[in-house]
Every structure is written in structure tokens, then in C-alpha cells.
Image (cartoon, rainbow, N blue to C red; front, side, top):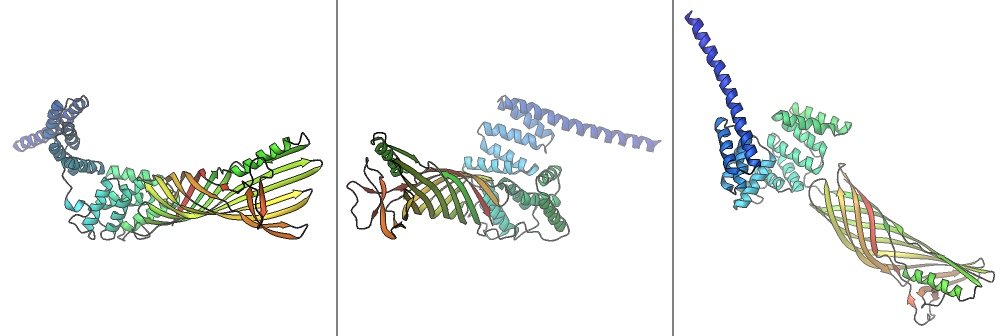
Length: 476
């Protein structure tokens, strides 16, 4: 009988302990919820008391520590806020809290521990220094630099949960979902938790079947004790790319506009015996090909090779049964350098680019009088430059794309070449000149050695203006 009483007492004691623990947790959460309402109403003094009561009842209530830290922060009590946020980071680590701790330290004028700062006491060559530098870059939203730091640290240590966790988050921000899924999957193998497992599953669903298979193979190999390398190249390797650009240009063909105006005026002066018509290109395609080398983080140098088929200016003049047709087909090629600076972090960046341009421009000339042709090929060189603004979306692994707007300033004159008269078997060196208003044709070849009419100027082709378009870049 005595033994039965002892067992009953023990049973009741254990039951009461469970009830007390449940009541304690419930009471801690009740205090926390009350503090949260007071915090939302900006009653920070009373909210502090409720958060403090919640912590007293449950010292592992990370949410209550964060609530109390928020109150201290709102009251500009940064030292106490910092202490509570550090407690939150110990109980429930997250990059967001780590980043906020760093922000508070900056407000207080306190730096992070030396090994967390770039250039601190920890050697940049040892694992700890590389990892802490990566965390510092991550907290300051320098994600590309953070990825390189973590990748270098990975070459020295493949067993740190925190390294794979931060590396996975960094890849995710950069849009590299394949490596983000693998890195977080490896972290989850080392220290599994429901939240991280759900992240990995969600990320995996966003991958193609081939990428899923690759990630599964790597995770299986890691589970078997094999060493995993996330990247197939060194972290500090130079990137190369091939960029294609397509756009629309709006050339300024002022001399040919004057040609059309003079032709119309000249025909009207013939008292109705003549007619004149002309067509002038107002826009043209721009097609660019650009090999690119990544000089350093977010700085690229491209070598521009582009073509701009400006189009053909056509005109026809008829009088007394005689017809004269003239055509000028203009084609421009552009060669140059393009230094591009990418701004921002993550898969979407803005960029500004600029560089010099060299443009060989050709004009194929044809004049037919009553079916008797005269042709000529004239060329010149234009010199200038460009400034480009745009957006770069890098969402498909090694492919990026986006819109751009280029402002280019480039023109050429002194178009020289050979004028060929097949009917008279003549080949005459000539230069294109634009004659003063009132004369027609105002754009005409003048043979070398002949003096152009007074007031004439070398014919000019101006490609200056805005070129909107789309770019597609492939990195390797």
C-alpha cells in the first residue's frame, strides 16, 4: 500500500510539473502578445515591462528578446538593444538579425570584431578570416563579393554549417538558384531543421529537371562522405561574355533633307513642266556584337563591332519625257570600346557604359539619266563616342538580358571614291559635296581637281542621337 501511495504521489507531481510548464509557456506568450500590442501603439515603456515578464518566465523566448530590443532601439537605447539582439541571434540565428546588429554597432560607432572586418586582424588567407569577411560583405549587401569570399573559404573548410547556410542565401540573392539549393541542402544535411528543409524543397521546385538531378547527385555524394565543390571554376576566375545588341537608330541626314527640298523647289520653278519626288530613311536598325571581359567585380570591358544599315535616299526628277533618278545607299559600321559599370546587387542591376567609337561609313551612289547609269562608291571615317544606360537581368544562370538606351555622337564627311561611267568607260576619282540652297542636285560628286561651286560643303552623314534597344549576354 505504501508503494502505491509513492507511485501516486510521483504521478501527480509529474502531472503538475507538465501543467506548470504548459502554463508557464502560455503565460510567457501572453505577456509577449500584450507587449507586442503596446509596442504597436508606441507605448514603449509598458511594452518593455511585458516583454521583460515574458523573458523572465521563458528565458529562451527569442521573440520576446527581439520585442524588447525593438523597444530599446525605438528609445535610442542602443547598448541595451544590442544586448537583446545578440541574445536573439544566439537563440534563433538569422542573417537579418546579424545585419541589424551590425547597423546598431555602426550607430554606436563600434566596429565588429576585428576578424569580421575586411582588413582586420584575421588573415584573409585563413578560413575564419575569409568566412567573416564574407559575412561582413553579406551584411553590407555586397553579395557578389560575399560569394567570392565564401567560395574561397569553401576551399579550406567543407564542414561548416554556417558557411553553407550563408553561401546558399548569397547565391539565392544573386539569382543562382542551382547552387543556392545545393548549398542550403548541404547545410540541411549537417543540421536539419523544418524551416531550412522547406526552403530547400521550395528552391528545388524552381529548378529544371536537369538541375534537380545535378543537385540530388551532389547531395547524395556528400551524404556518402565525398567532398563537394559548388563551382566548376576558381572563385576569382575572370568571366568572359558574348553580348548581342539590337536597337533602332535615328540618323540625322540633314544634307539629304536639303537635297529633297531643293529638288522640290527646282521642279516647282519649271512652271508645271516638271515633277519631283524623294524618299528619305528616318530610322534604321542597329545590330551589335560585343566580346566582353570582366576586368573586376561589376566592371566590364567590351569591344564593339556593330552595323547600322542607315538606308537609301531615293529621288526622281522628270521633265519633257526625260527622267533622272538618283539614289544614295548609306551603311555605317561601328568599332569601339565600351567600359561598363554595373550598379547594385542581386540578379537585377543597372549599368552605365561609355567609350570611344570609330565608324567607317560608305555611300553607294547611283544616277540614271534615261536608263544610262553612272555609279560610285564613296567612303569616309567618323570619330566620336557613346554613353549607354540600361538594366541587366541575370536570371537564367549564365545569361543576362535587358533594355538599354545609347546616346551616341558620331558623324563623317569627306566621302571620296570612284565615279564610274560605264557608257563612256570612265573611272573618275570624286568627292561628294553639298551645294548651297536653290541648286539641284545639291548632293553631287565633284571630280578630283575640279573646284566645287562657291558655298559648297563636304557632304555630311550624322549618326548622332538616341539608340534604344535590347541586349543579350552569354557568360562563360
